[in-house]
Image 1 (cartoon, rainbow, N blue to C red):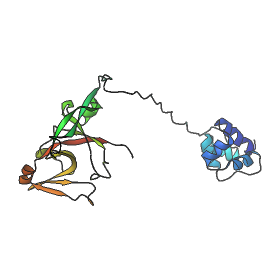
Image 2 (cartoon, rainbow, N blue to C red):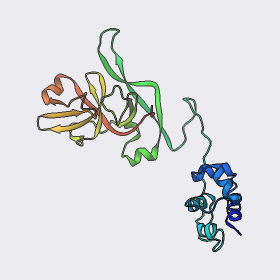
Image 3 (cartoon, one colour):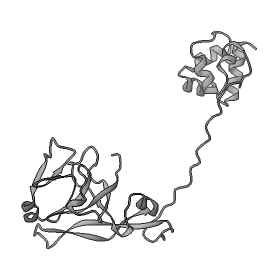
Image 4 (tube, rainbow, N blue to C red):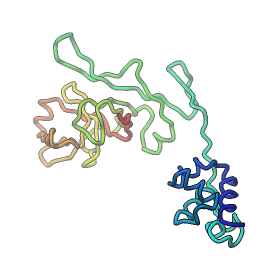
Length: 238
């Protein structure tokens, strides 16, 4: 077999037409056509064409050996299951648990004062094994929504974080980890550090949001409380 015949056989083996082969190999359809018609000789793209077609490059270029000798089998295809929609009326599976959201609630219209309370409706599903893996008791798992740009680029405005309310004391702080915080009724998510005199709240976007240091007295005065340790987060790529 001449090169042009081997090329056509390789393309047919891969079940590709000339245009499809050209696109995958980084060539033009005219180039493939000229090669199959014998108007052009084997090129530096021969090995790439062989890879696309799943044939031996030595066989394609020189006619040496078998067409498929030494060719690795393609990886198994990935089986994608159908997406199953669900809502609040969809029953939980045995390996799932509902995790409720915490949110800011204004005490009185126009008062400017807020408290943190648990939502009656907003919630997410978590696998029980994932909570166990993160040492989170099911009843201690809560979710909050991040507001603002202070935690960019890690957390965008509107990102959701899961937190463990079982780790909410100053003694539980791991320096640099993220925590959800109740700051006098305002929900905040920050990196937290322990200081000899108190705590430091740090944003990832430090250009616009510098560190905030609070003494133990200021923690009491400003009613700052750690709600829980952030163990999970998710957001859209907008």
